[in-house]
Image 1: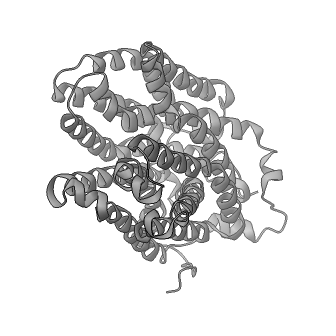
Image 2: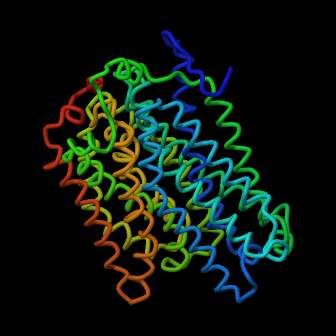
Image 3: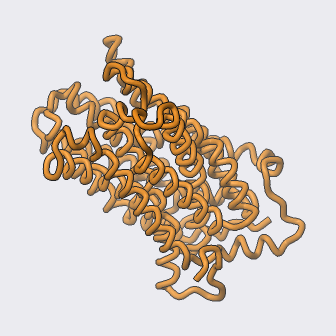
Length: 441
């Protein structure tokens, strides 16, 4: 079956489940790529840049990484427009092709010693491609999941977006541990072994592209395209300022909390709590596994009690518990106790992570839904999610680490205020049990 030929007609349960898994699976590559690039930069930095000290090489690789991250809003804009104009399925397929190309380019690129400045140029090009892809993947995926799922189970099915996202993190950790401690020596990793995880990323992207070839196009999108009076694009999006502000506000607290208790927590347990690196890695891996497993349960709960109650629980728990949790983690000595505290924090933010995709998608009409989710989300994540670790380390460096706890609490409070005042009566998040199908005009 050609890549861009959608299925038509009524979907069976098996076809719907396959489409939902295919639609959410790109997040696996996103977070796999995040961990792999960051974790292996110490091994590949000298291969792409002019000879220098280790710090200079790492700074150069970090700069390329940051540029790729800043491309996410551009990807959210471009892929959002494509998804609203040509279909969710086409945008998701193009997104995964860009991911594959970027990973493959890094895996096979000759070193600086062989091709000179072309090497960092290839690395930069690859990260730009991946940044564009990652920026558009979330909006198109969130939109597709909200539209393809049965209305009464939309929260449950949309929760699998974060399941696959966390699976990407876990897979990256497994690859890192296996290469470091089982298969390769540090010298082999520095010489050629760093190419292996990027090759795995390219193969994963190809497998997801193959899986996505059987996706059904959203019936809501198909119906909207038949309406000649329905238009999309940035101009139409500007007619929904309250919804755009709602996406930004919900994302602000959610992304800072998520990055704090997943990406940054591994370093926090070593630098502040005093656990060793091996213990910290085990705590992070185990807590992420539990986090992934509970997402569908929270999503199913939202289908019964409504999205608003879960969002309120995230906001209230985050505002009340972030400070004591972080303080307790700062003095923890047992890996088991650290696992319990980190898992408790992740359970608290599951009121956001499990349903954030469907909540945001349900705010917008069909012809502007992908753009409405992707662009404000990508902007907010780039500004606040991407800087969370830097802010935490900066507060620690100046001797006021406790201020970061207040920073996280304040960001979560912004999300709580968004639920209470920006979207207080929005029918998409207040409906109990069976949320209505999103509008098509």
